[in-house]
Each structure stands twice: as structure tokens, then as C-alpha cells.
Image (cartoon, rainbow, N blue to C red; front, side, top):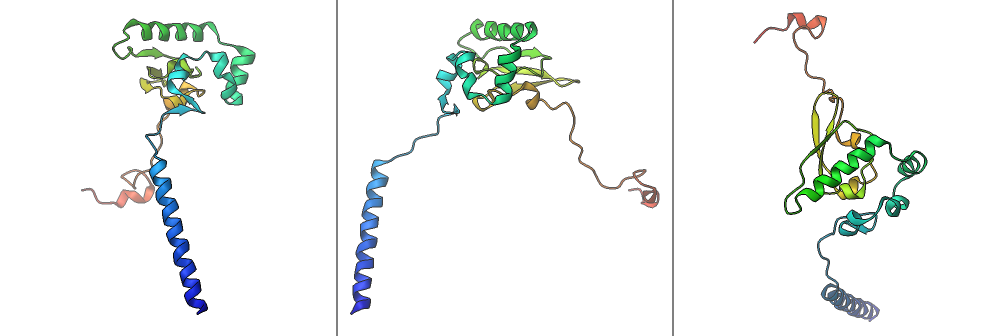
Length: 165
């Protein structure tokens, strides 16, 4: 008798749970994830001033901007970006080339493409919302990652006797 009672309670509990879960799935619907930067939507992020976004940046960027400010080179680069953005509003802005690898990515740069010099060539970097507050150097590698290959002719002394193909 007890086992029947336990089973009955268990079945009623399961049906109760299924009913509540069905209600939850009907009422709550998830849409597509909106891209944002630390809780700020992209549309608002692009229009925000640097001083408004400063508290949301990490400590390294806050110290860099707060204590030292931006040099004339960096200000010229930001002005060039602003000119390129306003030049053709219907089309994608033209790529801006720069050697300023230490430039911090600001919110107004989101959606633009910047070519960053890595010491040999310009690497195009499309700026996205999660990149805000980082330096441009993080997205254009100045060195090639070495992947050590197999033993070849002349690689080691023992490879002298490896037959040629």
C-alpha cells in the first residue's frame, strides 16, 4: 500500500512539474543574443563618449587614458577615423592604415576596419564590440608562431643518412 501511495505521489509530482515547465516554455522565449560590451548595447556604445565608457574599461586602459591622455599622434588617428566614418554613411568606411600599435580601441571605432602595421605588412583588423578597451597590437601579430616540423635534411646530424625522395 505504501509503495502505491509513494508511486501515486511521485506520478502526481512529475505531472505537476511537467505542467509548470510547459507554462515556463510558453511564456519565456529567448531571442537572438544582442552583441554588447559589458552590458552596453552596440548602438549606445558607438555614440558614447570616452569619458562615459571609461568606468567600464579595465584598469590598464583607465590608467593610460586618465594619467597620460592621448598624444597628438593618437588624436590625429582618431580624427582620421571620424572623417572616414562620416565620408560615406551608406557604405562601409574606407580602411585606415596605421603604425600606432599601442592605440586603445575606443567605442566610436566599432564597425570600422583598421590596417595595423606589424613590422612587415599591414594586417586588416575589423573592430567588434568585445575589442573595446584593448590595444590594436593584440590583433596583428608581429611574429610568426613557430610550428616545428619533421626532421629534414640538414636539420640534425643524424638526418644526413635519411634517404632523399
